[in-house]
Image (cartoon, rainbow, N blue to C red; front, side):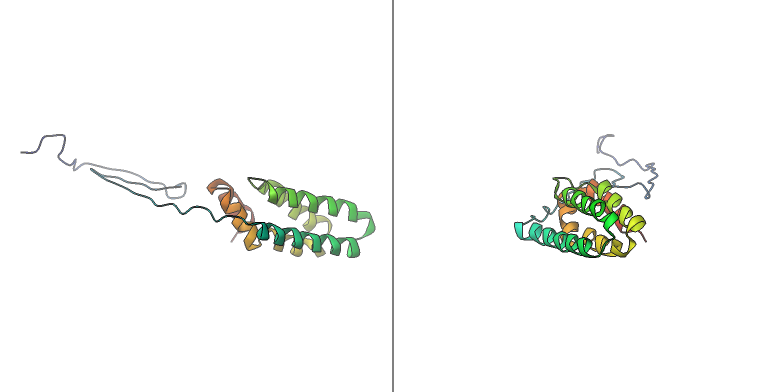
Length: 144
């Protein structure tokens, strides 16, 4: 006869709020879970060079086509954007701020700025920084 400790408890109850669920859930007796996590894709120098080139092209476009009174501020925002992307943990807040600055002040460039921010390589860089950065990035830039 099994000991009382090894017998399943038939009265297990649980409530799981899936809106705030951020990982696995196991409910029951004698449960074993395993998880395999893929390492984040390595960011190559070629990847970083692509982003640098995209921003260099955008800087050139701003220097040629932006109104003179806004050029300096726009170029400063692009520097902030490049720094935010290049950080070990990309600064999503700064990326959102820069995009919003262009939407408000130079809307003709807001699409180009957004295309840099949502570029697949930037996504790869953010993903490599971990789940918190990835979640914030999706929240800021991939709204339904």
